[in-house]
Length: 325
Image 1 (cartoon, rainbow, N blue to C red):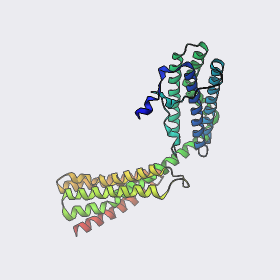
Image 2: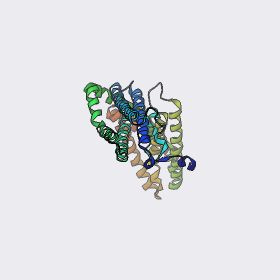
Image 3: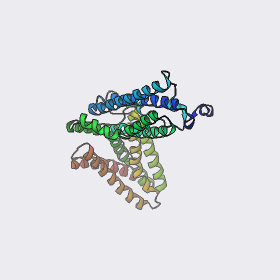
Image 4: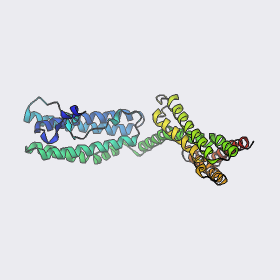
């Protein structure tokens, strides 16, 4: 790493020609990133894809203006210098390489890109003495600062109310498929499936510490199992359910939380106090499941509540009967 850093130039040591070359390569990179965003969004968000196509065209225009200035001042040969060659220079995170980026993530990354480019042109303009170069760099800084307004203009042109509504519904559907469904499945599994071993252990031993250990082991084990199962059984390419890593994380974490919710009360030494609190936590978990089903799955609340409460009650009764017997 030290050898790599030693070959990087300080921004303060760059010549005006190198600053122009750096700006040219940066604009080229940004245009390619915007086109990658547009291509990623085109199938599900065609109106937003058109916005990023327009932003890429504007970056191409910036690049051409910089090339024209370089040709006029320094000739045809542009030095090869990129962001990674300059110490302390801002770097683009390879977010565009990730699969299944959300629309909000892409828009946020674009805003960060424009802010970093604006700051670069301000610094670059302060480093040059040539009036024409200084003017162009200042103009480009203003253009980057105004990209948000430009993007809004592109939105007004390409993103009608109907198109916006369609994209919002698509984004909501993707959020549900990637995060809510796996998380809900995990919460249901963790909250319900761990009831029997936890309460069976509780009533069989009436030892709160042993019950907590069994509950923690059951919750963590179920979380790992659910997480790997969710991530492995569907890569999301054909189903459109999103990144398997995200789905596995949502399912595994929520499974663990669902089980630990009614295992943690058994850290209380008094058995009946711990059990009373654990039972109350179980009802809170079951009602939370019913609320999520109603909120995101549009399942009537009473129907969802009846199903989860009935299922949870049966598993709870099984654990108590087995433990008590």
